[in-house]
Image (cartoon, rainbow, N blue to C red; front, side, top):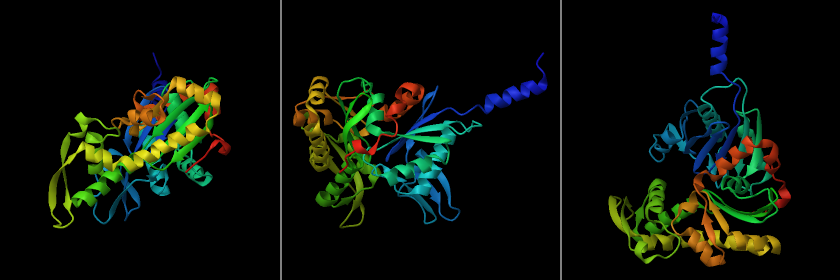
Length: 358
């Protein structure tokens, strides 16, 4: 028969286990969390709604995103990250702390070890801000460059002596990197990605149709009919868009064609293609030959834009693939580092000499 005291102690330790380690893809648009031994436990928008009078978060994630553009004066809904880096430190700290608590189900008598994916082109100050925000809910914080995490998550042989190229198109940044032997040979980070594609749609509607739409509407258009490469059958599809008419100031519904939306997105898409070309031009010959053989791998939410792999293939002459579950590549990579820490820990905290940013 079990002693009642022992039973209570056992239940206590079942409920308050030693914390599991956590991997976080801290993205401009979405934050994803991997808990060691459990897998991906959280995927929510990187949005915080703050009560300005009390200085506390009112909502975080999905609930906060619903409040964007709809809050009264005493509540502010914000995206703590901009272009892949922390723009509002206090909101970012609150968001990370909330997500860690939610992902760990409030359990743990020891704060977890954290691996956070960040853009390869960030400055030392920006890296320190991410580390300090992470320490709000963790005992130690390791940083991993997003292209390295994405490549590991996409199943590329990053630790082998073979060149691989990963293009991670997120919300705020596009990361292009050539990897070999577990390290970044060279990389480029441009602050043009999914958000700029959505912004370009908003600008087009304002200029051509005198229609003002919110960021959620622009993003919805991008997802539903956006494309990167000409396709006659798709270019003629269309959708109705509701917004405010600039001249009358009244709500109005218009119909937009997929072909026109593709044209609207052409400028930011060209910036991404040029970043890939520049990186290929700087790649050592042996590694370039490996990339021609193996192709280019696309990851991140931007890889889901229709025809983007065809565009990059057409512009570079190199076969381009989209990773399986491109949205999950970075967080899966962070998780795989935690699960195989002794073998993969050398990919963490990449030194500054390997970086090149635009």
